[in-house]
Picture 1 (cartoon, rainbow, N blue to C red):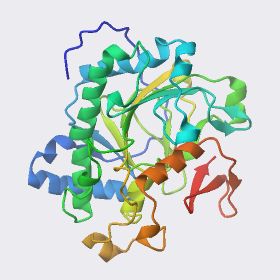
Picture 2 (picture 1 turned 60 degrees about the vertical axis):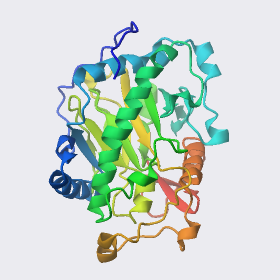
Picture 3 (picture 1 turned 30 degrees about the horizontal axis):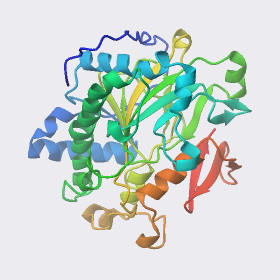
Length: 365
């Protein structure tokens, strides 16, 4: 990463909560051990267990220092604190029309519940930062954002994909070859900022900021930040909080990975809720790297996997040729999210549904 030479305002994150809350017991993977064949074989088993049982795990040893992360958080705040509302409007993503998040998603775009709309703002940048233009305040930092995206792709995503392929007993470059750096894909960096809501909105939504959902890509990479708000739906039907670990990464699988693995690697349901009382006055600034296969990859099960042949797998489509391309799936999911009218499930309480590309997509209220 280049030395930070551009002056920047410092974003001060919230202190870690001291509230007693029910944290999920997630596996911690030390990625630095993946540099040897023996290390990858060992880690592959750990990742396989974590992804097939929980769908989430922590990642340490990823080669990015605490100081580098602090710098990136300062950069992440710029699209929100240093760009006027008027200029933001010029860079709003035409999400519903194009199925792409590139640019701003401004507050109150998503419907949450009870007539309440969201209070989260995000700015999305393709891993190729030159894919589109950016607000003036962001432009001096594009070289650093590009280096961050490359690090997230080459030094975090690529090793994870190798381990997950080994877990399926496939050649370790199987998933890697579907996630090119120089190919056409929507893999992107997201800077995301949640703002505190009114007591009235909290009551109407039962303190839910984003309904329970699955991500639509293959792998989601979240750089841990201190405001407790993220929860996952555990196998026993309870919501567990995700604990902040300094300079760790939180990794989860999405729909596309569940399709490719025939349901073996779970797209875990997660949501965002109001933080504990001692953090409610703070904004919540996050950095993500959302990963998708190349646009032209068919999201059909990798039936060549010896593991899947032994344990069985699920098909969402009768024939592989009926499976959507990554391009089709991400456009349909992106344009629909928070915009469509959902139907209540006939089978599960508190669950709302929509049908996308013939697949029932669930939202947990």
